[in-house]
Length: 167
Image (tube, rainbow, N blue to C red; front, side):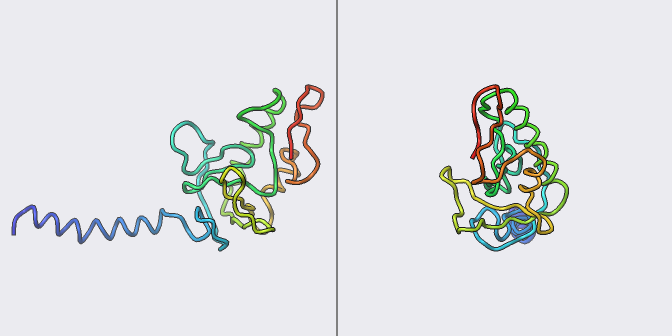
């Protein structure tokens, strides 16, 4: 047996099973990044999204990436950070983004399909409710004044400064 043949056999015997195990551990879980309605508990470290590929990060107060899937939190709307209508909206959007990051990093959470059965929005994002212990994390943002309920009254993030954002 040649040294190269021995190395190939060792690689097949050791590396292939390790790669398969890694795919099981690191790959999407049931209900994650696949549009399925099964509920799974998730835990991840969420930074705020920056340049480059997005895998797991917070885009803004109502949009995240989780394991390569872009997810829109279905029960809320938050101020814009990418194209705010006024400085107040930009500041509130940054606060909502940071607060969502804190909430997601605080512990395990579950993703649930929204009532009504619609699993994607018009931009192709997965629509999900994010919960911990039966409480909607979106509702936490609403209670803190950083979001409005989706389908509720229009939010006037800019107030007297002009421009209206909202649902």
